[in-house]
Amino acid sequence: MKIFLGIVIVFVTVIFLVGTVSESSAKITSYPAINYRLDGPPLYCIVEPVGVETKDRDNWVGSAKNAVLDWNSKIASFVPESSNPEYWEMNYKVIKVTDSRTDCSIFIEFYDEIKGSKSAFGYRTVGFFDPQVETISLFLKKIPYNETLNIIIHEVGHTIGLGHYVSDNDDENKKWRTAEKMAPSIMIPVAHVNPEFQTITELDVSRVLELYGDGGFYAFSPKLIATPPTTPEPTPIPAPKGPIRPFDSVNITEQSIVISKHESAVIKITGQINEDIFLQGNYVLIVIKTPLSDFVVHKVRPTQAGYFELPLRFDGKSPQGWYEAETSYFENIDTEMNVDFYFGFEQAKFLTEPKEIIIPSWVKKDAGWWAQNKIDDIKFVNVIEYLLSNGVIDIGDPYLNVDPAQEIPSWVKNTAGWWAKDKIDDLTFVSALEYLIKIGIIKIE
Image (cartoon, rainbow, N blue to C red; front, side):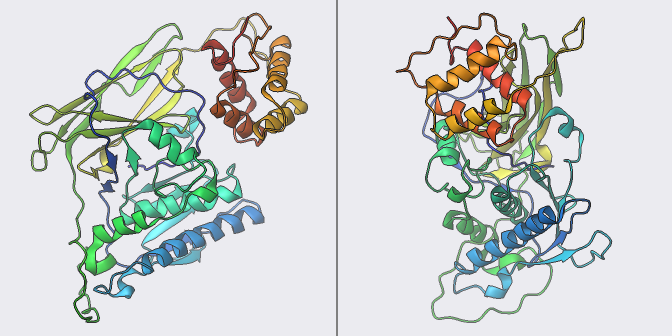
């Protein structure tokens, strides 16, 4: 199982064919729990990274400390009188790779690259929690310092049992991570583009209290718990909900899809809901996370027998790389049922080696200025004309015609800003511009 959090890098929208997705109905906002619970007040062991610069090590370790402290203080401020505050304590200690780990509940570890095969295919994962080994793995080497804290806070949220907070309305999901106001939850699947607009909210703490009840983090512990202090007419919170495995199976027809850019392919995600919790009329939510760290939420109506099926169509406009499907029902996720699959194109055969992309530094500077509204759209179009005329972008006729009254969409500006800050590489930026030209966002006459 892997729970992923990525940086928001939205160039394109994957073209999905949704054959069995239900008809439109009332909007659903879901805050599921994963199948993991703490069995006592946790001690987070932060493993000092080795082989990195001192400033990186200090920043990452400091962010991990603050992530644990932030959860601890936010939960403490909402603990009801009926519960003992000591039951909700969260602590940390910093250890070296060679230190004993016998008293650790959760490990926080840092890596040069994400473990597993997906890292080789551009899966923009920056962190995940694996409940089987009770470890948060983080890849923060290329992440700006002001973003690391929220990434780790999010992963700590998974260790408490929280899933991803999503809406089945993708426009709303986009607003949560791009609008200049606070996101409703630290557990939205993708980090806010501005870290200042994301933190632990009262909604997050309320969900934690709901999961564990008066017993706090001892709620699922075999240990005896001392009687909490008595208070007059305490207001009890709901009884804790233990982990639920909602599916008997979740499968995918193919785990690797490779086509030419002129073809298309359809795969299916299928599954069977556990009959003990199946209730007709309730939807299955499937969150598809793309290689670009965007995500799309599908709402699927199961059959009367609890079977569900989601077709996904891929073609020449779909981004290459690893995808993940996270499926929930009745606000429960079995993380072991998450499905990974790869989509890519057949390698083109070159008579000679492909030309290396070389972009002058002034182009990146202009892109950054445009993203900050320091230059207008027409001046940025001049940048694109330069790239076309010098063969960096290979799309045909290098003449652009852009109506000054027609603004380029804001998300294109975000792409330029990320490139200017080295969050994406030259090839990715050029590929994004080529795509925008092909689909008519940037017009060529």
